[in-house]
Image (cartoon, rainbow, N blue to C red; front, side):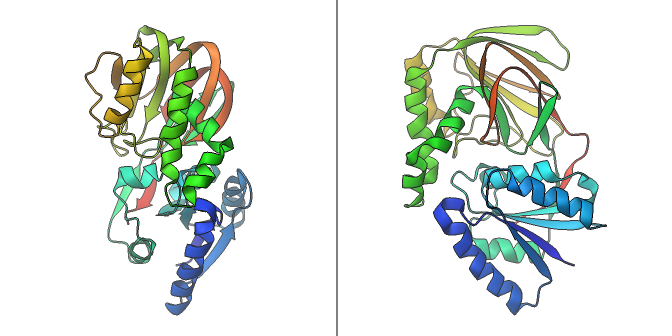
Length: 307
């Protein structure tokens, strides 16, 4: 079997390159058949994987070394889920997918499990549809406040600063507090599985979750299960900013459910309309401002190696 590694060498301020150097020595020591591709720019992994799908017949075992963003790009590059087995060695800032899947943070242990797999799961893959386009997600996708944080983190120097101390996930709450203070909640509507339209005036955000966490460890949808064939939806609306601010640390432990202004649902499809164009993200990757979008699941699952 040949393993194809997709490596983001710049993950966590260059940590990806360091860990790949060690991993490659282990692969050579065990005479493992492998090939490696390095990403060098945004959306590069999408192009790499699409080319692999076109040029190499048969099944592919793709191993991602990077963060949630690199994983998202790889997912979006796959053109036939039935041909792919996916493995993941997390080395990003937030690592929300790894957290939700209870994957090891030790890259040596992760590599051992990938090369000697004992357990697989069939993962649901989410997809956000907007203006005739689509973008897959494996963790979450949202519109409004949470997406605004993702957009800001990408241009903020805070993430680079925190990454130097291996604390990159702290950039999300730091930016989150600033964004919350400046935010003006907007009216949105939500319709699930073709049902009634539910209005939410003064909405902070609406997001669909495949796994439990977002933003470096916020457990926004504590019951989300990426194998159950359903999306978990969270709506935060109709509460004052001081209360939203107090609920942020509570959400780290998934204890925000049940508070007024927090709405949790489960569905196959969710349609959202906002009164104003707002930021959208898929797994933390920014999408230009949108007013309407739909969250759903791909009809096929993706085979994933548990590590």
